[in-house]
Every structure is written in structure tokens, then in C-alpha cells.
Length: 257
Image 1: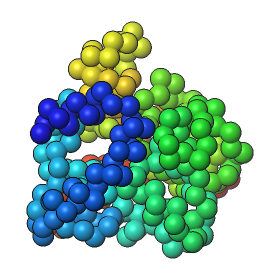
Image 2: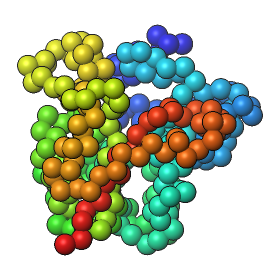
Image 3: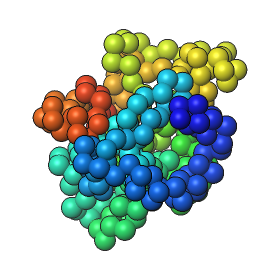
Image 4: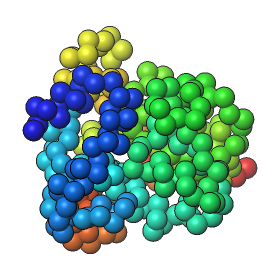
């Protein structure tokens, strides 16, 4: 099973994987149905989740129904319980839209929803995050999850995110973060895919973010919160929803001048 997953993740183009997943999800949800673990995004329960990972495969983390991972389920709980994203009319910009969220935002009667990416078939606007075709102060809320680690010039990308966010607006900018690493590591000379996968954890990553990530965001002008939302959940919830205890959610706001 692990070898099969690694084959699909590493060799099949991402747009193909997204399209194919729509066909296999109903079968996987039926096969894994049970009552041990629950995906809070759709409320469905399973006897176990699926394994997932590029280099190191993590067991019991991929939801059979929404294909959500630990970070997606944690973010959904936070958005539902702690923000007004799903209850107040506002404009949402979503980078590299995840399937587990896409239809829920698209079908909302109160969210004006725009998706963007260079490759995703779910993107409304094909755009470079370092040169966005949106006006200043356009969006109330931005979701940009596990994108910046792919971007060589992440400072320019952060500046663009800041530019298009409305004053008083909120953005969640998740990245693979090593909590025990103080400084971000990057080396532009590493271009070999296998070497990148070995050093950065994935062949298309260009850095490993450390805790100075939050200082980088502050230097752009954001007000930054490194939120450990798992501390606000019970141990039973962390286990049942298959969350990663201690994972930080980078929640940023643009100051109102």
C-alpha cells in the first residue's frame, strides 16, 4: 500500500490526481466506513484513515471521504469555531484550492469565492502568486496553505498577499513548519529533484521553514499569531479527528491604518 501511494504521489501529475480522486473517493469512503475516527469537514466516520506521505509515509492520516489531511481538519475546526468566514458575507481568495474545502466554499450563499493557482484545474484564475492580477485591498479573507514552500521568491509572494488583503482582513498562510528549527533553511543551488526531496522533504519544495517564518511575515507588515489550536481541543478530539498535536496555524491580519 505504501509503495502504491508513493508511486501515485511522485509520478502522476497533480492535476491528474485531482481529477482521478473524484472517481475513487466514494469507493474508499465505503470501504473504510466505521465509527473510530471522524472527518469534521463532512462529519463522516471511518474505521481508519489512509496512509499518506511523499518521503516518509504517515499512517492513518488521509480521510477517505474528503481526502483531507491533519492540517485541513485542524483548519476547518478553527474556521468553523473561531472565525466568521462561514457566517458573514465576504470575499475569499483561495490559493491552490484543496478539494476538501472547494465545494463548501463554492456552494456558499454568502462567500464571494475566487480560486487561483498556476496548475490546478480548480483555479478560476491562473496566476503567479508573485504577480497577482488583483487590485489592492480586494479580499476580506485569504487562504494560502502549503504554497510558499514551493516559491523561490517567497518574500515577493508575501508582499502580494499583503497587497491584495483588505485592511482589517485575515489570511491563513500555512506551510510545513519545523517547530524545533529556529531559522529557515534554503539553498538555491539544490536543483536535483531527488536531492530536494531528501533535504526539503519533497521534490518541489525549495526551503524548510523554521520559527523565524513568523518574523518574516511581520517584516512584510502583517500582524501575526502563531496559534496552537490543538491546545483548545480535548485529547479525545485530537485523536478522533486525527490531528497533529502542536501544529501551529499562522493567522495574520493586515492593520487598519
